[in-house]
Image (cartoon, rainbow, N blue to C red):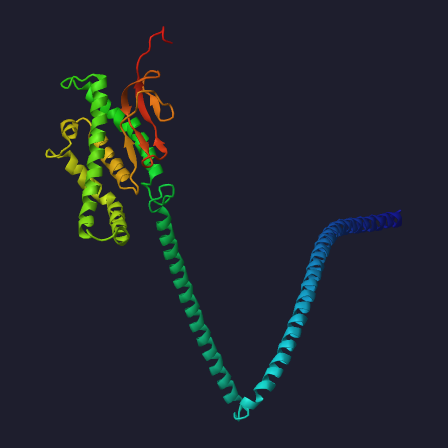
Length: 366
């Protein structure tokens, strides 16, 4: 029994050792599993890196192919350039052969090179001088053409109102527009101011007549003023033939027209002054100053044209719809003039229609 008990104890001890070994093995297995998972994880990372590397490899191969294509293209261009260089060298060699006789006196290539450099510099200077001469001649040609164009344009426009300078802001067509706007704007304002003044106590027809006569006075003054300016020049060349004085008088007319913009403010002050021959202007200037100033401007520019534009204050007895518009009523017989017609020149086309008031007609006549 004691032997058996001892064997049992030894067996228990062996069992415990075996269990301990089993636990150690289990721990080692667990560690092995963890290591296995780490290895698998690293393996997956490596696979992903390999895939990324494959993609980069493909891109790199693609870029390499593109570079190879570019290199091939560059190589072709290089070959073409080399070919052109060779051709140039052949041409230079043939040129050098032609220059040998001139270069025989030169003992060294350096001297020959310096000689060629000097020749090159001299050639560039000659080319520069030639280009300057070409530019100068081109500029002179352009200036001559400009002067010729100006002269031809002036000759075409001279006494030819159908051809105007489009750069002139006060050309006849523009003056026609301004004349219409004068009636629609400043005339209307002046009409209202005069009509509203109780001290004047004017009827509608009397107010229209006042504004019409103010325009007429200013127009006549402008014509007389221009004629007076030109008469001084005519006196200077009195006794010469018309052919001889025509260029001189034309220059005088052009000078009057050129200075018109500077002269108009002075003329306007002269007309508005108390000593003015325009009595109606002096009498009604407080009610129609803007109207008066614009009348002076338009009338002077119209009178200074060559030939002068015409403002017609005689409407005739019968209503002419081609030349006039109706004021406040319709009819066939003209009662009175409200606003005159502006013509391009005497007997010329209409640039701005006038306004008339027809007589009132009975219903029985209608």
